[in-house]
Amino acid sequence: MARILVADDEPSFRELLADILEGAGHEVVEVRDGAEALAALERGSFHLVLSDQRMPRLDGMGLLRAVRQLPAPPPLVMLTAHGTIPQAVEAVRLGAADYLTKPLPSPAALLAVVARLLAPEEGGAEFVTRDPRLVELLDLVDRVAPRDVAVLVTGESGTGKELIAHRLHDRGPRAGGPFVAVNCAALPEALADSELFGHEKGAFTGADRQRRGRFEEAHGGTLFLDEIGDLSPALQAKLLRVLEERVVRRLAGTADIPVDVRLVAATNRELSAAAAEGHFRQDLFFRLAVVAVHLPPLRERAGDVALLGRHLVTTLAARHRVPVPELTAAALAALERHAWPGNVRELRNVLERAVVVRGGEAVRAEDLALGPPHPTPAGGAGVPLDREVREREAVLEALRRAGGNREEAAALLGVSVRTLYYRLRRFGIS
Image 1 (tube, rainbow, N blue to C red):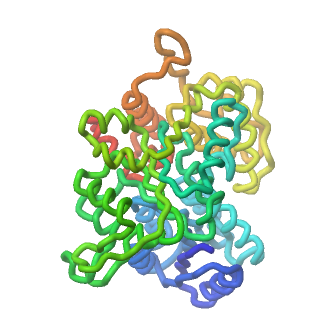
Image 2: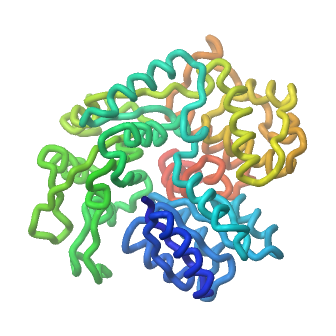
Image 3: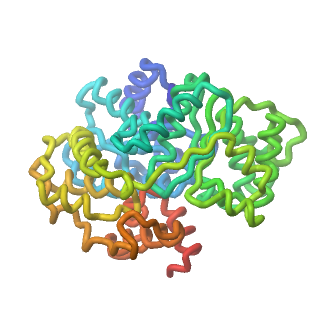
């Protein structure tokens, strides 16, 4: 089951949450405030964080901002008193996964939220599609899942690469083990070695205790390395050794530690071209891409925008406890005209805002805040632009819609603020 961090300065409420969650089989770590929560997150990974809104030293909003900048941020649920629900809604807008009121409506309400957030989220736990290519691709994934082979998933940001990794994990022999996700693009270069492979006490300034790396945390399960193309050459060499020898050595360590991990890697780059040009290790590329899966962008999935739109407003309405809104004909037409540079993730964010703002009323085209349609490239709607160009356009569009606010732009793109800053530097956007 999941490892859950509970941050609350009321001991009795903290213990109540722990009793409910441990009764459901989860492992619970209790802390008294946001500062202790951050320290716990630095020591190890968690699948979920439950945080009180009002705490000494570092409150829930401060903790939310800090969590969203972690390399692999866990979802955070805000705990709020009835009188501060507007602040909780604001927390959801800024990236909280959900909120719960204090006192709890019931133990079942807590467990329902936890169960939903522990399932993959892009479009729900399953792909929602009628696109023949994607249906065929999912059949390939299901046939590969029971086999102990590495899988490389490619596709633009927001197409559901992590959802494929979850599907491989859930339908494979390691389904009972941990699923650990790491965004390689968000790893600080100085700490990336320690993050992946762990370190011994005293390995560097500030290493006051031994720490397991992500490979050890994923032992017996699946490790998902997103944005694998952003790993440095030195880390590529270390990763290749782990794949070949099935052992890791912590930073400053002297012993090899066996690891049993299924590796799923993902990238939005043309990794085969990067390998051919010498920008990525070719031997590592071949080890990662035993099976290669490419996800088509949403704009190339005819009919899926309306299908996904109706599915998402249903799930989002349940999440925000409002009646399921109708998508008007004009709203559906606007959704289908949009180019979706951020793919399913962008569609979800657009609809979530509309569902929250409308509160159960019908969603109109003007509620979507999509702006003018994106220009179609010469040669027809299906002609793809260069992937780097599309990603840069997605970043610029998110910044435009967020009025330049980078936290909001990161939320629209579904990435951490740190990842957004990395992309701003990469694309030369000031």
